[in-house]
Image (cartoon, helix red, strand yellow):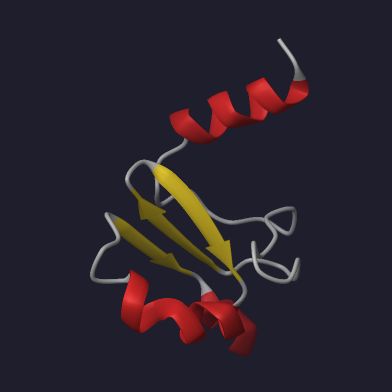
Length: 74
């Protein structure tokens, strides 16, 4: 099994509300991700900036919207 296949398998097995880590990166810009949107079984990761930019469109369609942006003010 390749690393990419293993990563995809782990992502499928992980619950939508698992904590985000510093290794999770925004799909738009590569910054640390603080929001995970689950749509049709796929995950999109966003920094706080890009989550705010796309939230109005994506959140109504999302199966889950996991937001940890409160960590930025701590």
